[in-house]
Length: 383
Image (tube, rainbow, N blue to C red; front, side):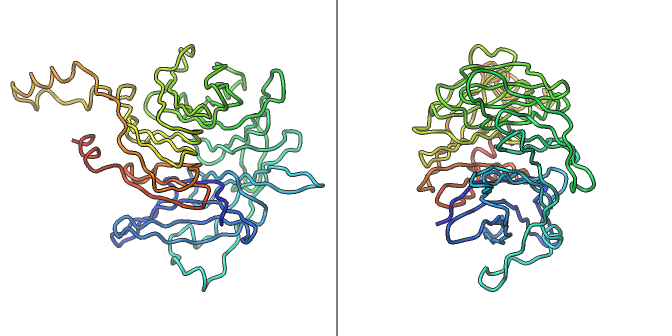
């Protein structure tokens, strides 16, 4: 059985060909006693509903986090475990796929007839003084030259130079307080010219200004137990979603941190992952160790709480009256669908950044499931 560690999908891994075929790539990290550490590249042919798999070897160690460059489709980072002097350390590195994989010209072979290739190491993101690396975050709107690593109680901003073959520390900050404080996750905000970062440690959520590396807000008891994941609303710059071991998903306006804007309690166990849709921020995915993925329509706190704006010039008198009456009340939040194809804890869920109606989820037993937003909801949003 494969132990699944991470899932990542980005627009940089979309490949289009002259033929009417679109392939969406998901990167999946695996490790087990039987198999070497691997990254599986999943090609999804949306038109024919076919999934193909290719394998790259990751000799460095057991993978726990994968993140792909937003600017270079062949570059990615991994956080992985390695043993050094009888100690297990979690390190990070930048890698490049083989050139033929970047071009999209390779075929999707049968595993039995082809030898897996190996990732090319570009540089390490390790600093022994900073401790174990929990995750690496790429600058969301950047040129692939800046990444952040969260290592124990340290936020470290790296500059990648010479085609990502060299990494230097630009600045850093340290989490201060009582006890052994460690970051569990973080999210680089796409707003404010990418100068802000949100991090989670224990039950707290903190905001950071990357220009001064100083803390700008702190939600001390954001969840009743460990905070697992964070995500920024792509269209509302102050809105942040969080999830945790208290089985809850919470939505925050970071300007007013005393109370969450809204709370969801639909899962029955730890919530590991929360993701806003990149194009339609009312759509939210959550994944949990209750083996379920839930798609919610959080329209009341979205950028379009009253639906799409309609040009009054395009409406007749009767339509205009009906439209005005309908626009007075915000649309209702609801659970759109609950997906139960997994038989084990679902650790990761990601939207496709190539197709806003497509998403994938990954569970502990190695099952990758690709689903679509229900067609009725899709057309209701579009029309």
